[in-house]
Length: 217
Image (cartoon, rainbow, N blue to C red):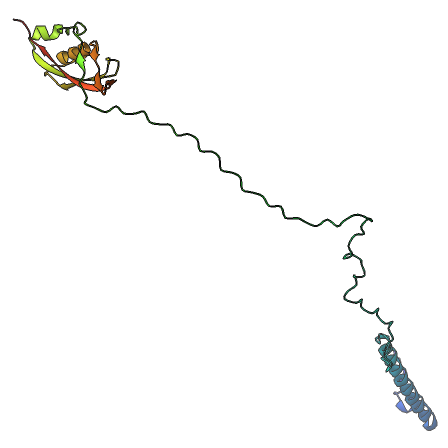
């Protein structure tokens, strides 16, 4: 049988071998302190530079600023510096034009126009219109009324103008038959009248004309 190979022996870690000697340790500690002091100096110098960057302008001084004096104001009687208020120069011999107040007289009222005069109304008694003999044709008897044997009296109201011609004719009182009433109105429209008179002048008047219808049996 073969025997196992022996495992190599590892030396144990010795911290004392890595630590510096007594004098070397002092030098290392001194170098560390010096480096720390230098780092603190560099850091403080950097802060001063940053503060200087944020400073704007120059510090105020006790001396007051000097300004140039302003021009003295003009007297009250003189014109301003722009010359806007100065009156325009006038030519020799030219008088200054001043506004004048012109008095205007009120316009005369227009002459009144002559008012139309109303026609004079004649005075005196008034006469009624009268039918003219020979110009009052008899009414025609309606055939329908003859067949039915209708009879009656129709009162016709007629307005007669100054020329004697009827202008408005209507039934004032009927007979009960429309045929008789219509025949009476048509007859009076063909009549001629003497107009109503007042103060010797013809005027318009109204007259009542009774017309009687009597059927023969």
